[in-house]
Length: 104
Image 1: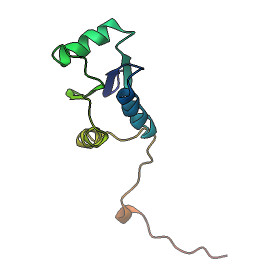
Image 2: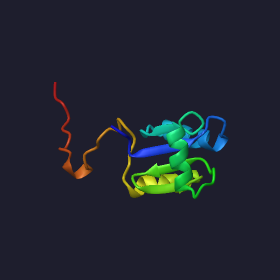
Image 3: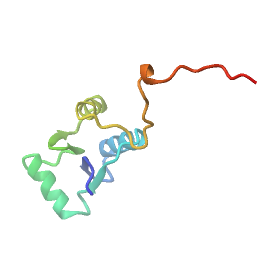
């Protein structure tokens, strides 16, 4: 199954590396497409950027970000409520039963 996030770029691109590192450190799943090794990915990336090689290109659902800042990327992740994998689910505080001291 494809991820909600697609990253198009090149291994030699520092900006692509920064976006991938950010997503990896945030434990957010994404698919990476190296445009130097994947001709179809290159063609798609060029089509999405009007024929210009501007990387990284990040697609979140159907939203296309060209060379996003990390703040812009996080804003889009928040807009789509994309959270890290394996993030512990927390119950609201009001839903937790009160803790009673244990007697011995």
